[in-house]
Image (cartoon, rainbow, N blue to C red; front, top):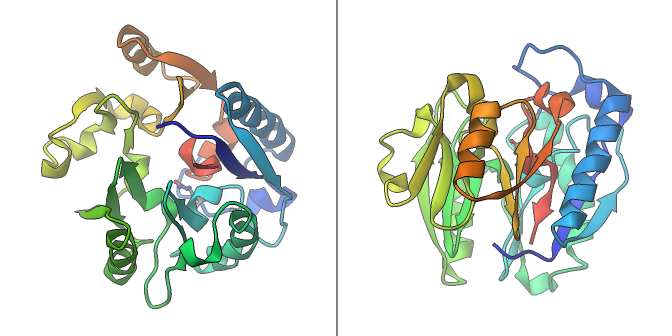
Length: 256
Ligand code: CIR
């Protein structure tokens, strides 16, 4: 999980119109900008060069760049986001990705296939793909075909009642996953050391390992304690305004 680069995108004022099921109220734009700046600082502290894309008011959810692409050491895939209002987000992300990958290694998910990056969890050359309301079987099969061409394998995990696969599970290196109770007993995740968060701290299961650091959301003391005890070097960030739109730490960047 050594990364050199990240792509992030500024939230726009239209963030208040983003898709949400959270029932936590509307995000505050000014606070979202402050939290986003701190997120960028954390990525830099972890050693990444950060490419910052300008806000696009036409796409209220476009700060969640993770959903628009899959980026690995060997190839990139521009997705076809499952939510209609998010499909156009891919254009700006594709332009940014072209600076890092040769065109021959940039692939696409095409309709009727849909896929959100939040549904793809990479562990080495395995890609776990969540089949969700956003990612359909056709999209997962397209990704699988591309990945297999580079010697990767894919494993589908059906999910129901979670926005994305990574809303409930994150691979954090050292053969370890953070999980919510939702994934207890999931056969495909049995081979990992599992750090499980209860319902009240489920949001912390979406944390990101970036080089020597594990970035976790503020406000989850039990999760923090467990991770500290496990020896992780933590950066804690308040991402309350993104949580209001069902977004977490991983959603805010593409890391590669
Ligand atoms: C959405 O519903 O699409 C956004 N409001 C949140 C996307 C979060 N992205 C992610 O988990 N990868």
